[in-house]
Picture 1 (tube, rainbow, N blue to C red):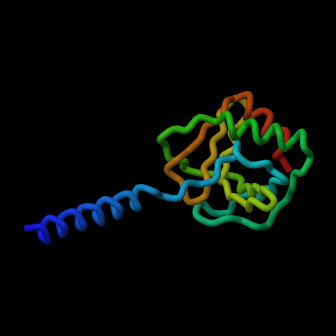
Picture 2: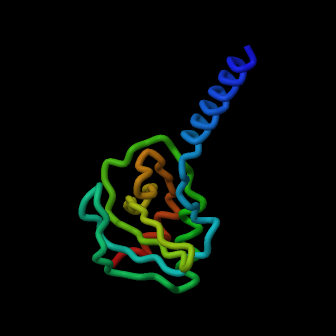
Picture 3: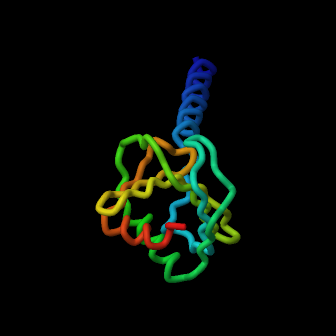
Length: 139
């Protein structure tokens, strides 16, 4: 009886730890947590691939702060983007890099982005942020 009880407890704990491990999915680094050193921008060539042919790298602190503010204030929605027009490589220095896909809206529209690999988590930016982004990103 004691051995059977011990066996059930051991199996229960093993199952509980296995389930907790499944819950601990690695989250993407959040932009507001790290200092951004630079953002490199390329025209997106494919929805599922990242284009490394950058036409612009932004390292000016004022522009980086504007970009960071636009990304941090974006609101997460459950939506899928049909298309993106820019790929962004966000460099955090020693903390690494992060890849984003951006749909830059037209004047008077919202813009949206997602972290590469997290296409189901789309973040939408205001029309005002779109205007600011258009001034910075247009080649």
